[in-house]
Length: 597
Ligand SMILES: Cc1cc2nc3c(=O)[nH]c(=O)nc-3n(C[C@H](O)[C@H](O)[C@H](O)COP(=O)(O)OP(=O)(O)OC[C@H]3O[C@@H](n4cnc5c(N)ncnc54)[C@H](O)[C@@H]3O)c2cc1C
Image (tube, rainbow, N blue to C red; front, side):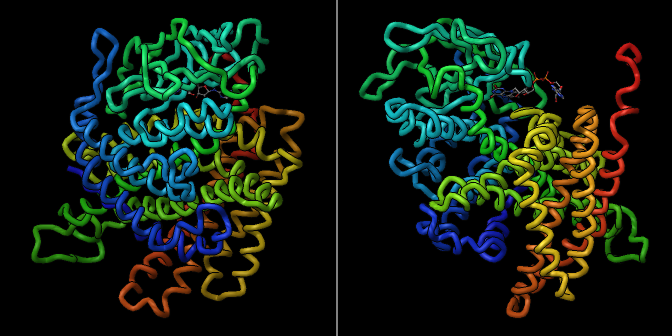
């Protein structure tokens, strides 16, 4: 059975020594997040993930969800009990404002907790994850009475939430959406239509399911400007907050799919279901987009989480599996063969995964911190800068962490050789589960277009300039330190590539938009490499500071410095290839007619 150990000490090092979370004590909720509280919360979340839901990961995969003829859905054995423990622990609302029953702690902590849950059991973690997404949408846009009615029970987890966007003919292009809403005399709406691929659309974990549904009000304009957002409960909710009669929404079928079998992916039929408008009429898409940053960060975390758990298992296997002898000479003469960790090519795989995971975790925490500042700071300028950074980094986190996270699950599987292909070891499940994160919540190609098409030029390129400037200033400052020079010098080269690519788009994509589309994915990955390189420099700087007094922990901090060097030497140089591809433009990509394919 696969192992999993929540990397709590890693998160504590990042929070305390790299990002100095104590400096944000002026933000609401941060004062309550004392070092003791943070450590207690993370250790408890780690324990729950390791002991309660990790053992259910394989069961969830093999058993999957089942749908009865009445449309009810049963989750795999053990999920119900594990979910009850999640609710009892109050885990869903740790970052929700206290007035709705949450604990008001920084959203950064939720991001870290979600990594543990997703590493342990991604299919299970999606049930609370979707609820958190729905809570965010209601918090930002719902009228006070809707908030009062739905939020408290969603925050405890007694009720779960869903997001209903996708229809059979409309995924990326939501302007094609057909689900219909008809206004009723009492101010409610009757919602009709079919939604597909709805995660957690129906299940047996909670007493009620609160669906957030995009639909078009009768007579509304076509396209994206005529879409509204509605809250549609599975069971109608009385004024006293208790669930009553069944609403006109049901699960038509469950999708058979590649991975995340423990999560119910449902076709949802809305047959005149009663719903209430969230936010303004025809403003449903912008309402969805305000919570998209958080949801996309959440999916990026899934990529990191699968990469982390796959790495942990690959590292253990590489130390145990005996095959061949080290090319530099026998290392374990008393054994029949050396463990495969002696082979440089196996090291290449382990170091690649490790160098990604540690920096990706830093990037998640840094991005989540920007989100907290953007939502909680009283200083308008600080809010704007943080919001810019969060907006810019979100497609990078979603796209790069899920693409690389998936690639790393394949790499970890490779470390197992043929045994990685056999279900018993659990490695092929990580591959299958990680794959979806590249697709949903906006396929990764769309994340790249969001970055290049929307985020780069937004507000005259303000967010990009701020990022380039921050990294540039850091390189200059740290360049004076002989110990940091070997790390910041390559980062400077990569930053130069990012600047050249940004400039190239400015000069070549306005007149020929295909040039932007053709280079977008390369640009997103190049951006990711620079951001991860920046994270490695900050991690290394913190490790250097800790080393003189590290005593027993010296090996730990030295390992950070070695891994940082590996990243700079073996991973960051890829920015040059990305730049070359971007600068080749769209010509060879677009020349052949469609019939030639
Ligand atoms: C397991 C699972 C769970 C899901 N959960 C949910 C959920 O809870 N709620 C929900 O609403 N949806 C959910 N989805 C749907 C998911 O978000 C969509 O599948 C996804 O957004 C892509 O839409 P699509 O499948 O229609 O692909 P399409 O939109 O048809 O895209 C196909 C390909 O074309 C590319 N493409 C499309 N348009 C463009 C463009 N303009 N420029 C460049 N490339 C383009 C895409 O990047 C993609 O590679 C889920 C899907 C799955 C498989």
